Image (cartoon, rainbow, N blue to C red):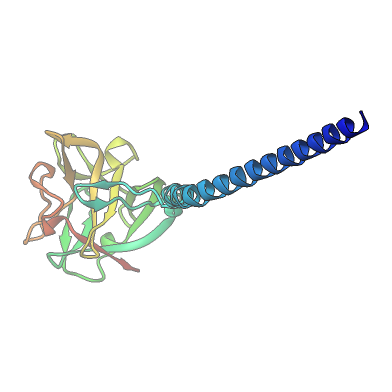
Length: 208
């Protein structure tokens, strides 16, 4: 009887030890498999995180016809006294009679202008001497306005050649913008005939 009990005890002990070993080996294999899976998956997750962070941190930029749109938030409310020197070698002037044209006289008081930023990218241009605002009518005519209004809202843009263009912020001609421009003889151009790429609409602001 005692012999039988010893055999049963030894047999149970061996079985228990074998079970513990099997459980241990299974645990080790599962751990190894999970480590291998993590190593193979981690680079993918890292790449995704890098791509997501790159796209999130990349500055948003918009373009129109391949051109980067510039922000003028820092100029909002800014007031500057300038002369606008055209690509055609004329100073833009606003006469006391309301006529807008160009002059080659450097000391013409009607060519001294006050440029005020009234909104983001929108300016109002007033002649210091004439006290009239540069305006573009719905028909594209340039004139000096006594009071500031919709016709006096101009979109200011820095072009690729360093010159500025000024287009009506309110009116268009067949979906085309109408610009302030001077001909080769210093005469005002009708807005309907102006284009952004036409250098007759390009002006260089000169500090007074």
